[in-house]
Image (cartoon, protein in one colour):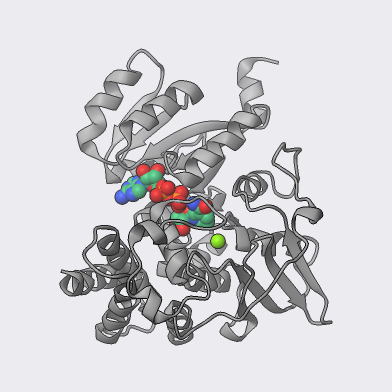
Length: 391
Ligand code: NAD
Ligand code: MG
């Protein structure tokens, strides 16, 4: 077999956001399974050093650095290699059109990942979706565009991967309900009097998962679970009443599907994002892995609790946005991105994150069936409003 033919049998993956927590773990999966995958494209926001290092190791066809100031440095470092180098937001969106890409891993964080994911869908690329904000902002448009282009969205988020795994062989059966599990984050069991004084260092210490800063703060406020409820609605065509959240501090059961006969299927395993990443890459197959195995005797108890909506109002806010629909979830996401950023820069307190989002939601003009342009407008307005509040 020639090298060219060999290439064709491997899945060529565009790793969008390759320098992040999901991106680097995806490259771990690709590195461990060189017979199955190659990294066709790597992209980064501004971390040019890591992008260069990754490009030298994985020899992708092309790389994109979003931050144009870093272009020259990346270009020069990769000059002796046969690797195309692009920079800027436009290139980030266009790169997914490359014919040689077999799958796009959407693992840029936040609203910044939306346009490239939509363009990938329009270009009929299967998506491994880590970027939940894409579905929060524009779930209706994204899922409709995916349907029109016969493109599959394979969930990478561990809860949604769990549900997807439980649904294998069951897609024709009606879902009565799903339970999204949540660890409860670093402040599980704490009340507002404690939460008002917590510092970012405490909020950034997640008990079970090591992740990027934004999602780690979202986990501490429980906004992450709120975003995941909306993500689940769009991925699995569910109504609000069909989605429940249960706190499960050990993060071993990653989520549960309950069918019409009352039977419940759960997917479990140690908390390790490499598994859902790999499953999204290999679906419907499974391939061997050396990920650490779960040992029952290390976990004599798996426990469950009700979420505390009083101390953590974010889940309820997300449910309200889901219920009312339109452009509200888009505003929720934008306000949250700004508030999390402000908290990480010591501008606002922990409780101000949810308070900021709530204030912005109260001010946004409701649009029932927004176009993508309207959503972009909503995103901008919500950011401006949130910035006015956070200073
Ligand atoms: P991260 O902050 O670690 O990485 C983000 C990546 O996106 C980096 O490569 C960064 O360079 C790039 N990026 C950031 N801003 C950009 C911009 N404006 N333009 C272009 N690129 C940009 O984030 P993460 O934790 O890997 O999360 C990525 C996505 O996956 C998020 O949507 C998150 O909710 C989701 N997710 C993450 C985890 C996890 O364990 N980390 C689990 C489930 C879902
Ligand atoms: Mg998750």
